[in-house]
Amino acid sequence: MVPYDKLSPEVVKLLDAEDSEGFAGISAFISTHGELTPEQERSLEALGVRIRTRAGDVVTCDIPVSVIGAVAKLPFIRFIEGSRRLYSEKD
Image 1 (cartoon, rainbow, N blue to C red):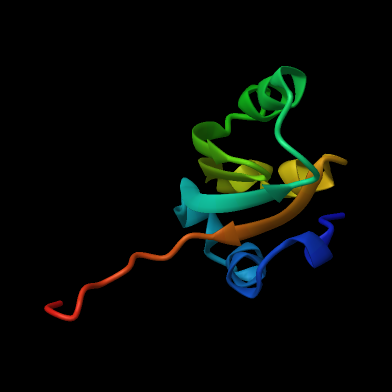
Image 2 (tube, rainbow, N blue to C red):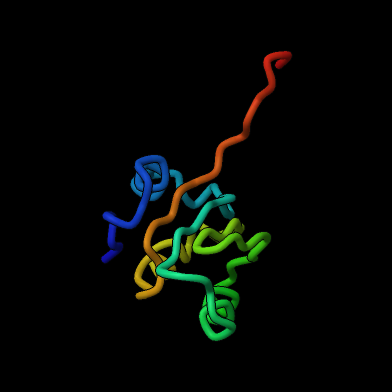
């Protein structure tokens, strides 16, 4: 069972959608309990998570949709939020 309390509403909506198999992955922010250790980073990478940026207890990454539940179950994960594209006033 996926720990939905660790997922933002848009990620929950994606997982609950009948056509979620159509999505390969999402760009996301992961909030962790402290900075990632090398062992924790390897755990994420073993699941297929591609880590892009680390800033304290926040990580930006790409997560395959098929492993979001497994990532959320990791004890060092606090919260997963799908990232959104930002637009300038000109867009």
